[in-house]
Image (cartoon, rainbow over the protein chains, first blue to last red):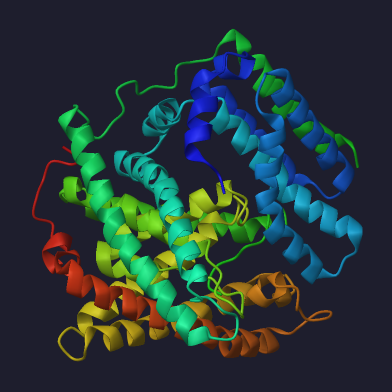
Length: 234
Length: 232
């Protein structure tokens, strides 16, 4: 599963062109790649687009190998869906690429942008409650995943999960989720309290899009190239 | 069963565009209702419940490979308006992780948000009439049943093979060739009912636990519009 501490480290410690690019250009880059995934009908242009994204990430000094591995997480659902359509290898490839290409673009955004900048940008385009809710969810989610992993490991070690015992599985999962929910509320309340004490009043300190910069050529260029490949290569 | 996991570029544009129109209307109404609420209580709760929904969606229940949504729990704890916002946040984060396309966020939020709305309304309508476990159980089954009917209606108005929409299709045991809307409805309601019972049992257990350990989360005071001043 994704390690938020590592993502935070990559986002805050890099100094390549993607780190220097503005948040708005990287958001446009993401939208261009999503548009390419929506428009794609063949696997080859999208596969080429995925390679373009990997090359731009590698060129910018991002951990592109780890990002590729993480993006494959989304392939599981897409592959199962593709298999269900019974359309052959080309169909499976399109489905997988439609999932992993936007996922890689999303990873490019989050590993090259410190999260306060992302949420600052979001707070300029979204209502405050949505931006604040997304922020709290983001910070709480990865903490909870870690807690849930520990819970699942403990239950498995004690024989609490077994494919043939559905009722027992449901009972154990319910207890884990209930405990998680109570702990999540406590942690989120504490986090929000700490933020409020430090002056948080519903918007990020550096709210704003920041405008375009010289280094925006890389995200905008690579996003446009991915869309161009899909639209032209038919 | 009540949300769509398919990647971008599969659904017809008018269908997902309609999903976004409905999303914006419902989200606008929700935010309008939330404008006078005490956000110091709501924001941490919104973040916590949305995060737990995401974690729950990442868990598979063996042996039927079903995953729960907890949208009814979100509706009961957060109220209909904030529950809808939680459904939007959960779907947005999921789609950014590749769990369903970005273009289906609108439709998925409408489906999960409807579960939250129904769950909250029915749960408080039945207040004091039965034990919390059974109340939550019943409310979840009814909400999921009604939202599955909404999903079937959605499929009926699209031009796609209904087999595309099924969770069973995702698990690799899909149906060969085109299936009719009647067949899809039968499959969705019969196979989906197993999922509803699982989700209902989990929802009942979770709410029973909360009622014992942190009953203030179920208090109606949290849902009242008793404090002005936005987030501050």
